Length: 210
Image 1 (cartoon, rainbow, N blue to C red):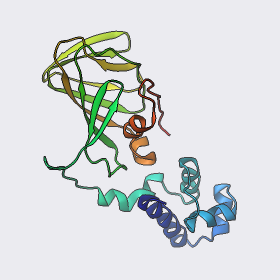
Image 2: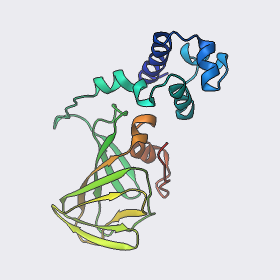
Image 3: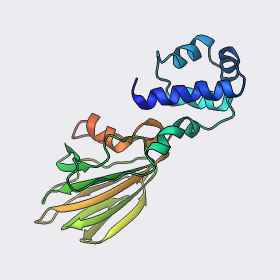
Image 4: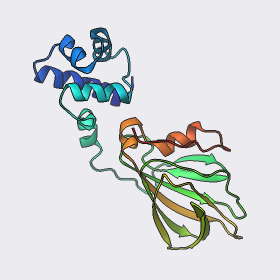
């Protein structure tokens, strides 16, 4: 188990005991078996978000309550100019991701570079909202059926569930700051980071909020 998963499981056991519930009590209210709860609390399995939701309901709590300690640990982060970014090549673009080791956050900042004469590989859809700011150069942005040419210091803010994508018909590369926010980031680990790491470069898989 990762450290964050251990903290979540420990928080479940802490809340259960604080409410005077046995493992059998919690299992009965959550619609799970006592052995499932026992295996979770003994760190033998990592509960999926659906199971966490059932346990939270049984404890009269919210799933985010299980992340309490982690949220406090991530209340303030600094990324210095000499600190490392995670660099990912995907779909003809280069992505630089700060805070990549602190994955349980609501907002996910990414800086990416779009080379000149880069076509759109595939439209993307995702949960939550996104903000993009053009740091250098220019890019072309498809949103729904409209294409917007964005110059340096232009920015856009939009819902991620509409098909969209960034490409570059110009002669110079464009550098973009993007910030994505979704509650699925907090529950399942930052989603754009996982998408870039796991999806083939010619396929951008959509994701949805839990």
